[in-house]
Amino acid sequence: MQKQALKVVFSNGSYTALAVGVFCGLFVLLSYMSQFIFFAPLFSFYIPQSEVLNFSLIVIVASLSGVVASLSIYRIRLLGESVKKTGGGFLGTLIGAGAGACSCSSLGFATASALGSVGGTATAFLTQYDIPLRLVSIAILGYTYYLAVRGISGKCNITK
Image (cartoon, rainbow, N blue to C red):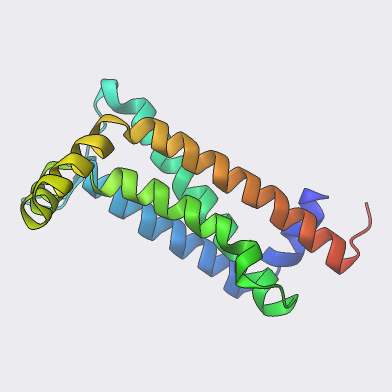
């Protein structure tokens, strides 16, 4: 069921390009915010041994976000489903990106100074719980992936 649904969606080059674009954009953004990628003074990519789990979760969130975004857009455009039914995937992407983006020091200080004590509390929460939030994001994206594949398989009458 999964293989056929993915074949139907990703046989169109625009959905493949969308998935790759979402993955690359989110991967670079989250890696930069989590200080795995550095652009100045020279481009470098470094993963400390203590941060391998965090980096792995970033890769999983970015890849699932790309696939789920393509499946969701396919469902909305070609199958005529409502955005409400496919909104869970975007929620998971936002949770995963928010957990990574707000935990870095420069963005955290900017948030804390702009929003005062509420921003400081939110930054401290996201810094402390970024791995559990990414795991929740992966669970939401996994469930949305399952629903999207099931919906596409049911609507397109894909045979096993």
